[in-house]
Amino acid sequence: MLRKYAPLLLFSAGLLLIYVLVSGIEYVLAARSSVYGWYNLVNWAKILLFLAWIVGLFYRRTFQPMFRNKPVIFLAGLLLISVPLTYGKSLFDRGRIAYNFFKVKSTVGAKVHRAHPELGLVSVPHSYGKNKFANGKTIHVKYDDAGFRIPHVAPYAHAPEKPLILFLGDSYTFGDKCNAEEAFPWLTGQRLDRYTINAGIGSYGLAQMLIRARKLIKAYRPEFVVVQYSPWLAQRSVRIYTQSRYARIPVPYFVREKDIRLRPPLFDPPVYGLRQWMPPDHGFWPKAKFIWQAGIPVFWREDLLHWKAQWQELSGSVSAPYTSGIREIEKHVYGEIAGICRKLNSRLIILPVSTITLPIDRDRVKLLAKGANIADADSVLWSLGKDEDHYARLFCHWQTRGEDSVLVDYHPNPYAHKIIAQEISRVILQDPSHFTE
Image (cartoon, rainbow, N blue to C red; front, top):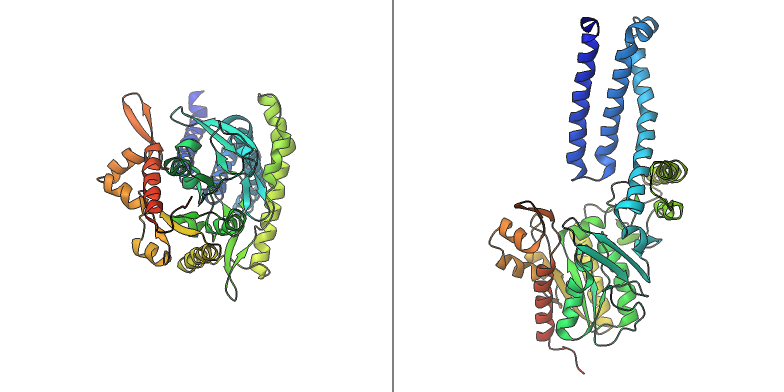
């Protein structure tokens, strides 16, 4: 009996081993990539392994008589069947991940951000959410009535008071993995006894920062405007989507036509509409119903919009991102913000901050900061960190697991934010046009 089924068992064990190997590759890539590059290939490999197992079970009785001497047709049929199965699994998995994001894992992203026709995504005014970080710390995210981040104990409604400092940037300025009162925009205001506006949003690039600068500097007339400089900000501004593991969220990006221009997001992301479909209860059936009735239709619509955008780009009706003009885009953005500040009598401060894997080009920052101050917090942090390991231990987020400490996030920790706030405060206090009462 065992001899009879030994080849089938060995065949199944071999495919299972390959499946585990593919799943391991998927796990490694999941921590380093966005979904759309590797994910469908891994899914396709899994589907092919499953089909190979099914074929192996019924080959002699069913498939061999049908496709004898027709191996090409047989293989073509397998590949043809694998394509819709792979796509169907992709829709299902994205619906499942969306459910976990909106319902289970995150109480922040689903509540305090929404789609925006000009910025791609934006904070929801008068909103609050909280989440537990990997190290067990509770992170509160609260936006005031104007959509700016504030401490969770602060009131939603309050009028900005002058003198005023405006901060523009991404998650570093926002204070990702920290509470608002631990982030450098708030700490700077506390040190100088001044009102601050934290207009940083996670995943933003130079395109969104420029759009916000045009509106907010004119609206609030701040005495100082602190603008983050990081190597990745320009790179984000030549991508049509922001990074996400399950959804496509279009964002504004730069194109080169007669000159450098901003192109609005290609379409309104359908994924934020999933909030209204959230079931009140947890469990298998509510989750399955959500995926079938909401997740799969929403991501199918998203794919249709994406394919339409790709066709528009290929046909030339929509300009492609200006990927070869990173330095030109940096010069354009920081130059325009500097011009706005001069026109409205605001002082510009450029804030270089980065991570241990992407060093700052100091000469580049000096070139961009002509006529502006530089609060070189990155240099101050590196002067305290002896090497990359020491820098990470001082300024990144760690979690204790047993007797070991594990690095869980590269964003600045509260200690790093404190040092950044000290450097910004030092530069403001030394400025000849410092606040006058």
